[in-house]
Amino acid sequence: MASALLLLATIASSANLSAQAGEEASPSRPNVLLFLVDDLGWADLGCYGSTYHETPQIDALAESGTRFTNAYAACPVCSPTRASILTGRHPVRVDVTDWIPGMSTDRAQNPRFQHVDDRDNLALDEVTLAEHLRDAADYQTFFLGKWHLGDIGHLPTDQGFQINIGGGHKGSPPGGYYSPWKNPYLKAKQDGEYLTTRLTDEAVSLVDSASREDKPFFMMMSYYNVHSPITPDKRTIDHFQEKQSNTPKLQGDTPTINERDAVTRGRQDNPAYASMVKAVDTSVGRILKALKEHGVDDNTLVVFFSDNGGLSTLRKFGPTCNSPLRAGKGWLYEGGIREPLLVRLPKSMSATATAKASSLQPKVVDTIACSTDLFPTILDVVGLPLQAELHADGTSLLPTIDGEAAAADASPRDLHWHYPHYHGSLWRPGAAIRRGDYKLIEFYETDTAELYDLSVDIGETNDLSKTEPERFAELRDALRKWQTDMGAKMPVPNPNFHSSN
Image (tube, rainbow, N blue to C red; front, side, top):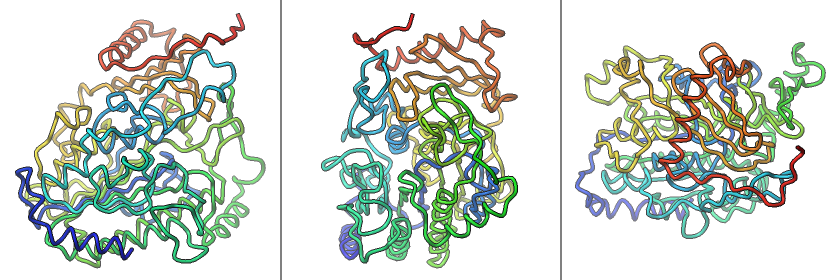
């Protein structure tokens, strides 16, 4: 941490050099705190319906802000969604469409298609949110936790973050969740440290130091939790084991749901996973408390999000359950892409905006949102002009939060997902589109597609492809046109594929 504080002091001493982009720094400009949780499912939080997991701090954040019910990751796996958050651009546009480096088709059973190549890092010519906030408004920029968007030369400090604590090219925590770990960007202080607790300690220290400066900060707290290996937090695992043992509805074998060649967990009853969720909740509470103790909570935008759905679907089911959503991480059913999204506006916004916010929050918003929207939303809230040429696929959510987007909701935009890869969850290449309440999913290996009305079938159990042929054709054509317009890389046939026909 000493090196981080030294760098922070260096940043402070050269504060006047960063306003080169034409925007002057302002002490009153809001801070930005972005919580990003790895693999957290839509239903993993109390405020989204979980009764087994315990998330009082995150639930309180939801009560003090806006909770989105129709928020989506741009991809059902991590790296592409992370790229979309930082750039406001679709994974197809930045050519990061799979987790880095992705799964070889050698691990897939009789794959019909060859591997679709994409980038193994976020290109340096992409302008990230951190770069823009730093250059346009002299923000202090801090990254903590999981990066997974490139190795040396493409690390957080190469992409606009002045401080990087723990962020490297690995998707899972190097060396595990307990020290001594093997993370070159976070040296252990002692054996037995729990990674989430240590990252939280670092975040609290940065809030302390940053709040003393006469300029705002952007902190991206990117948890390794709740990604595998599922490793319990020793502080709370006994509690959740006891809770499971004493809850009648959690007795007996965990129910399962078949999903093609895979199996989905049918309920939340995993004490180890629950303790990992609880560790995130405790961390969020500690960092929000630090904001308050240093007098900056009223002038901080807080955003809470997940990079993809909870891991529920595997050859033998995963650690969590996304019910009532179908399937999980790696799949284009709702369980793989629908995410918890919480936004708490700074109270120190203009008098008009503050009055709106206080009269409307807490609130629940059903408007469709996407990970690409975070970039423009943050610019809008902190008072910077939107940059459509940068966040090309994102739309500011501030009008929605302020209650000014009712007219636009009558004809919402389409959302698209392009995932032409094989995944360890046993997903096989495909794509999807949501238009209004309807969602179509294509499965390339079987040359089939399914259509669902999410307004009455959030679990995607009733395929309407045969009963609504016109809508089915319309959405399938729209998806293919979007792929063509975007130059999406499509799967190429595998010459070694053995057809069963």
